[in-house]
Image (cartoon, rainbow, N blue to C red):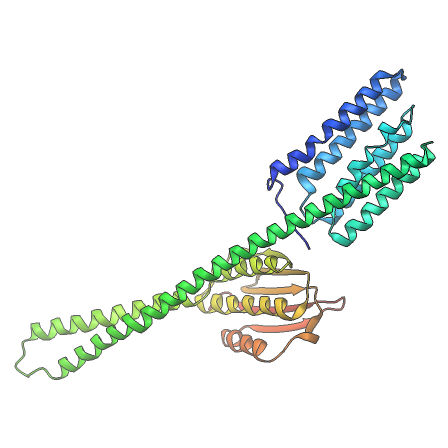
Length: 372
């Protein structure tokens, strides 16, 4: 399960993880300065300790929760290499100098999703055991360190999954609230259409009947007032219809935001790129429906773990692309969905294309003219 957090999210928890550096600094500095050591070795050890703290802090403040496996791998590998160097240059090679590997296990568990995290924890534990034995440590010491590393790594992995579930729950709740708001808007639109629309239509009809039945001797001022009543009723009816239409028709940016929230709530990593563009209402409504249809296909059929929704304006046209890494069109029903999109897009001078990608995945492309 992927989870992406901004660096300022759950900051108290991040700072708590940084507080564990106090243990490392206290033990290592005491051990370094309590025994005779050459100045070059002391300086090198202090530089390595500072580097370990810097990588560990960078991971928790900038990388943890970002779902960026490349930077996470840099943190895990960099931290493991630095701890190994520190272990190897330690002149005493005593047990207290082996526990910095605990930090490697914590970072490995917190850096990746479940299966990759298990592999990373096992890998850094294996590296630690090998280095300890090569550095002259006893097998019992290496076993103790490895067991604690595995437990700490599994704990970090469990916390990561807990945070991921919590974030997904928040997204799902936001989506439920959004759907409730949209449902209320639609209910209000129906009520306006059914109640006020019918009343105004009746006013217009009755006014027209009265106007047709006026006696010939009716004054011009009375006829003018009656025409004003009919015009006002027609204007109010038209305004009400436009208002109801606005309630019922989705906006493009709102639909893209809703699609991103829905995909994230379903555990699908979603990337969105939307340049600011003013669109005629027919094109905007059609593209909004296209985003909704593309998102529905990703959720129901693709079994994807990643999706990208992008808008790009070029040469007087706007191109919308919904791209995923799922199973392609094998599980997609090409019937009503794509046919309905074409019925909306082609009258506007646009084009709809759907294609499987060579490396796996599916791409839905909608191209419409920006100016009508």
